[in-house]
Image 1 (cartoon, one colour):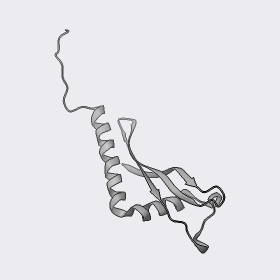
Image 2 (tube, one colour; image 1 turned 60 degrees about the horizontal axis):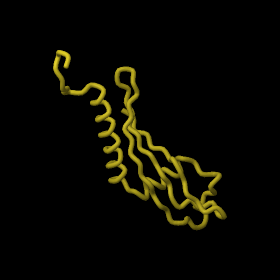
Image 3 (cartoon, rainbow, N blue to C red; image 1 turned 30 degrees about the horizontal axis):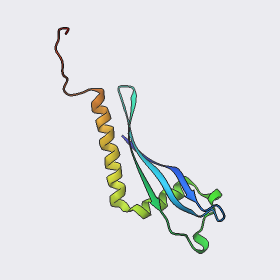
Image 4 (cartoon, rainbow, N blue to C red; image 1 turned 45 degrees about the vertical axis):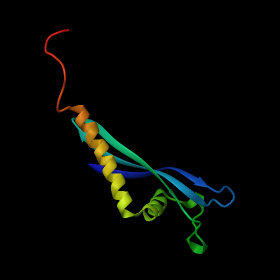
Length: 109
């Protein structure tokens, strides 16, 4: 199983390029019987304006920069909880591929 974090959107001040909010996605992925199965959860984080040399212009930002900010803002506990939610959703999707129980009768009708 792989857990992948990605940035889906950024909100910024047009004049300065200051990013004040990031929308992110946490995806748990696994291949089961040649099918790629996903479990996903979303989160957003807000930031305070950096002052001085720590400011990174919008056009110079990388996804790694923003994810570092997000993880700092949300903390390790919430990061792990979001990863667990994505994993649970992945496990539910895997279980739906091969349900442990089924309803029905073996004859028509």
